[in-house]
Length: 174
Image (cartoon, rainbow, N blue to C red; front, side, top):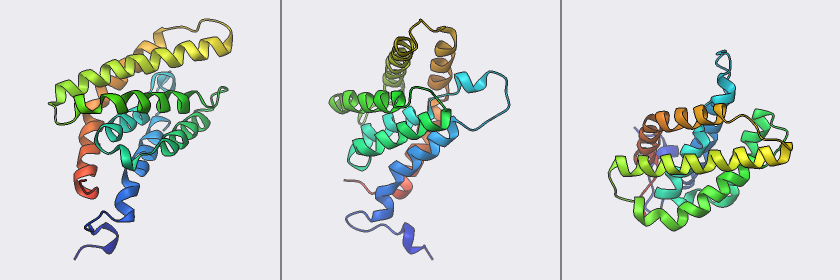
């Protein structure tokens, strides 16, 4: 017997509509989990970016800009960054740009999706690095940013798989 909470309704029930936001928040939390690996916190993969990328391509109606803003703000607060709002801004810009490119990524093979994510990650990480450098008043080291981008792109296939499974299991199609 299935629990009523996860039962699919013809028009998509309220719990299904929360899956993109909740999975994005879960991945934001995963980005800041302390693993006690020296230096890892500086280069941890941008799991929140992965979620925003996935849901913007497949179900942007279920991850509105306000949800993306909240996820980015939460990420900044959990990271303890002195420049609160930088992640929110970069995730909102990512969503905005991807909304115009969705048709290119929907129903494509995974390598195309991954290549798009690689370009997106490079742009987002470079933007955040430039913005934080500007706010800091000096150029910051690029090495941690490059490692973060590499780890983010390398872990994307696993996150994409998990997000696609969640989408198939809980989110009805439009």
